[in-house]
Every structure is written in C-alpha cells, then in structure tokens.
Image 1 (tube, rainbow, N blue to C red):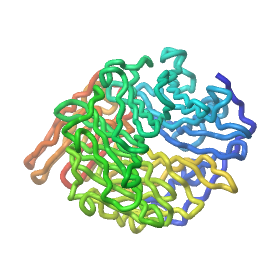
Image 2: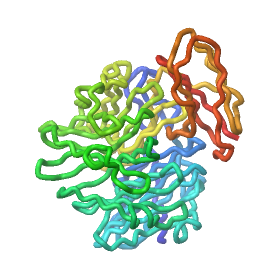
Image 3: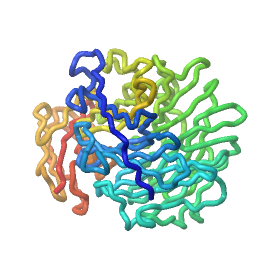
Image 4: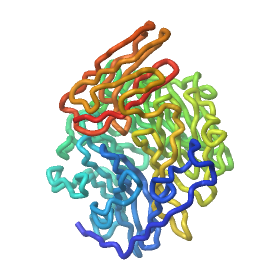
Length: 507
C-alpha cells in the first residue's frame, strides 16, 4: 500500500449562525471552534461522505482528498470536542491510496462493537475495484481480517461500484454494489470471507428491468421471521427517475410479504424522486428521506411506510412530506430521536418534523435550519449521548470544497440523566452496571410503557417490551448480556407522553 504524506494541513473555523445561543438548531460552541471545524488539505477539494461515532464518543469521518493528479481515500478521527485526534494516523488522519493509477475514496464506514471499524473504498480506474478495509480504533489495519486487513472484491461479472456497507446484528457485513441496471449484494463474515450461503450462492442480484438502479441506504428490523433488511435508493426506467425500496431476509432472499415480491418502485410523484437513507421504527414502520425535483428545484422528501410496504396515511399527506428549502435540497441523513421526532440533513439544510410529519416550529422557528448558498453540504449525521446532532460533509470555502464537521444543539425536550430524573421519579441503578439494570418509577395514571437499552448509534441492545401499566410504584429489571462490550449506552424509559433517557456505563 502506498502511504501519502501530507504537504500541509490547515484547520479553519467558522462563526456560529446568527441565532440566540442555546436555542434548538444552533451550533454548540464548545465543539470545534464555535461549533464547527473546517479542514483544508493542500488547498484542493476535500469531502466527507460518511461518519460514525465510536463507543468512547470519538468520531470517525471518511471521504476523499484530491492532489494534482488523483484523489486519495481519507479517514479522520476527532475527539468528542471536534478536534482532530493527533495520535491517530498522521496529524489525526489517514490519507492513502491502494493503487497508483486510480482515483479513490471511502464511500461508507461502519463501527463494530469493539470500536474497530470497516471502510468501503472505491478505486476508480478502467476496471473499478472495491476494497473493504478493517482498522482498529488506533488507525492500524487489523491484519486478522481477510488478507492483512484488506478484502478485495473478486467479482468479474461486471464493473461494480460500492454504494455502502452495513453491519448486521451478528457483526457480519452487507455490501451493496451497483453496475448499471443491476444491484448486487453480498455478505462478508467477520473474518473477511464471503458468505457463500447468502442468497444461495453468495450473491443477491436484483434486476427489476430498469436502465439504472442503486442502493443508497439500509436499515434492519426484527420481525416474526427474524432479522430483515430494508434497502432504499433510486432507479431510472421508462417513467423517469424514481425512488425504490427492497426488503430482504438475513439469508439474502427477497421478502415476498413486502410490496410486490419484496420490491416497491414509486412513480406517483411527477419529475424525479430519490431516497438516500432509511430507518426502521420499533413497530415495524419504515421511514425514508431523499429528494423530489418539483420541476425547478429539489425539495426535501420524507415518506413513511407500514411494515408491509404501504404508504402510512397517518404521516404527512398520505404518507409523504415535502419540505421546500432555500437550497437545491436532497436529504442524505436521517435520525429518529427518543421522543419520536425526525431529523433529516442534506444540501445546505437540516429539517425537523414531528412524529406525524408536521413541521416542528420549536426548531429554528419553522422546522427548517436553512444555510445560505455557501453553507454546509451535509452527507452524514449521527447523535451524541445527549441526542445533539453531529453532521459531516463539505463546505465551499474560497474556491474549493473543504472537510466540515459540526455539532448542533438538540431540540429534544428530554434531558439525559446519570441516575435519577426528579420530574417523573424514574431512577436507574446500579450505574455503572454489569448484567442487569434496575428501573424504578411512579405512575400517577394508567400508561403504556417501554424500556430499552441502545448503543450510541441507536442500535437496540435489549428491551422490556411495551406494556400497559396501572397507577402505582414499579421496580423492573432489564437483563443485559454479561458479554456486552464495556462502554457508554443509553437506557430509555418511554411513557405515553414522555421519554426519559439515562446515560449508563457497562463495566
């Protein structure tokens, strides 16, 4: 592998937006410098494509940086305050190239439970190559994975491009690729070998008769038949560009109970629509975000589906929410907060809507945080342990695109506690914990309740299922696998009209 040294590294800072400090949607000024960190490498185009948060709160962002001839793949590590971690790589980053002739970039990153991470690198030359690399949290390749830490896709059927990778609940890796009219999905086992039992022969090929199609987002859900994966993206066919959804089983088979034989292509919107991200709710409903071209500019698009693939009429207008913004806007990142509100981020805007899809006027006045024409392009978003939004992407800065990472104040009304929430007498103990957490609370009236533990990426660890409780005092036990990796987790106690969130430490 060829390792490229930096010519120079310049870190720039921006002032916060002209909003009152502390209001929902404002920059958190103790992150970076006044809420935002901008990195310019060699004075050329630099872009973050994806980002994840490690169990310790450190942040890994990935993308590309250009030199005079080619582009290199790029990995940057930040501490919890948005400052590059100088102990990682060279001056806080890894800038490298797997081949001498290709333009390379990291498209996607996933974090394993132990803090190691995987990145998907596209090396664009005459025959595009797909690499999956595994790194330790220290930035060194994990040589136990595949071949010295590097998996090279050996498929010779066509020229494939990787759009994203996704970590399943059992720490296996789904790889979504496209080549013109075909989508190909395969699975890597944790040691870096192809799972030959996936989709019977190792490859799931999706051909819906479109001129072009690709997968851009994946989310998982547990149903009666076990784990399944919902995938969204876009296709081009006789009716134009449309967004689409697939659902497959963990074994790599299309789920015939979803849509039409596991597939939905939506062409009811005029002009062009696309879906870039998806998340699933605990009740099985599916939320997607992307964009719709109204004939002149793009509008932010949100859509909600039932577990069986029908548009959910209780959300927005017949399941669809369209949000016009100042920019030519497409939503690339999507999160659901503990109170059920929805945040989406994309080109020069962040939007927030209520669980039913109506604008949330408590956020930035009208539910839309608009940036000007030189504002951030957001391609990735994650939450910290207090549900503040961390965004990453690129910022136009004096002629080039520079790397951008920022943190915006959460607009969730729920605080994150350590031991006890006085308002509802909810208490958790012990904290830190080993294999169980006790939750006590008082109910003044009958209420539906749910208790669940997630990691900082929002992935479910364990739960006490929803139940209807009568008024009274309750003490319940949440059992936790003793082999769960140490680190910080979020315990959420949901009532009908309120969610209380506790930050808990697993020893």
